[in-house]
Image 1 (tube, rainbow, N blue to C red):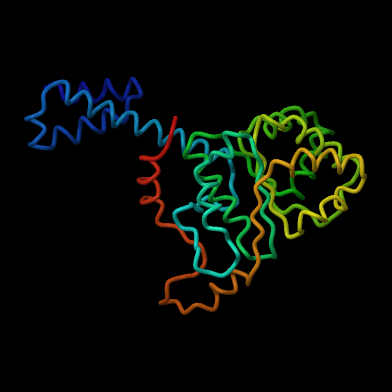
Image 2 (image 1 turned 180 degrees about the vertical axis):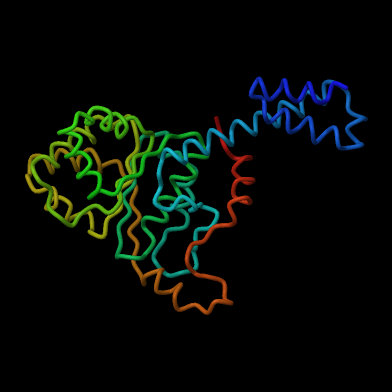
Length: 272
């Protein structure tokens, strides 16, 4: 008699996890052997897991990752691209984000820089950190427009408040005076407060020239490079390797499991 009213009340209170658990337990014969405290514990566990999953999904949507399906569990260590497995697994643990350190990922086109960065970002979302992804050319275009239409302050807050900011595809075009100033303001406000991950086809020793003006270049790179981990990748294009593989073979390209399987895994690992 109380089943339907109870479920309706739980959903009215937005306790959907508890409502789903209530339905599941009602359908199981073994649930009759549970006492009230055990019932309540199971309902609360489901509600907590449900909320953690929703928070993770919200952080992932807000991050707007280029490769939203990327995950550290699917990283390919077999292909020769000079990926330091020990360092990458250390980075996956997320301590560098806690310490507000940076990460520089360099290497030729197609070697997997963006995918690996998004995999680390997805793990950061799982661990409860906020992430913002931006391709550098598009970001500078957005900042220029934002200066003119009044959105700059809001966009700037988004960039500096994220626990992890990903600047993908740095270089090779030399920065303009406005771009240098904007970048300087971003890295200055983030210094010691958040982590920045930069990917680039250019080696780090050429970044000074990309920034252009020596005073700005010294100030910007001092805040980015000196406390940064580095992944210097090299090797063949992962896209070409994948295209060369027969359809029946296991793909060499980094892949992910199905969305439903991934969601199930993440529900266990998400933090508030």
